[in-house]
Image 1: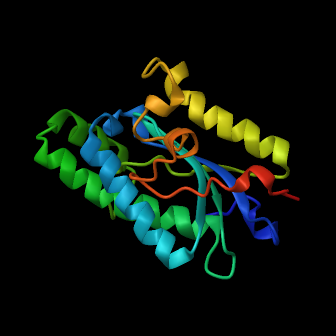
Image 2: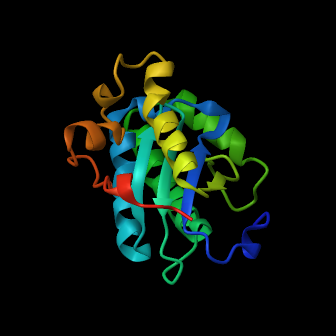
Image 3: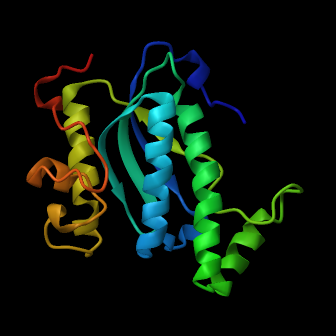
Length: 187
């Protein structure tokens, strides 16, 4: 897959990333699917040694800010593995839920590929290099307010699959988030 300019990046390590389910299917309305994604993130966090600085899992997509350790892997490596293996786990959950309507959507989206039966994630993910402190906090606020804007909760910290809980309540029960960035200067 083409890196769309990522090969030119050398020192960047902070990224705002968004990835979306095909046809904007709301698979993450099922807590089991959110939990499967979180387990995959935790697994690859150990392998690639990245820090999660903010995240939210919305019904059809997720956003996060990560700090990568480029000596362990790139943002492309991380996203490739998380998307590939979480898709397998989420497809299994969708089958267990007997959601044939969703399975048909995922099969239809895989029809252009010879080696796939189903496709969960859109082809690419969107990423932006976090270039400074202002951009970092703008993206954190965007992530945390996403469930509020979508009408899912009244306050960001009320949404279970969001780092707003980590920042506001110190609650790291879903996933550990590095909330110590307040005094760090990103250059």
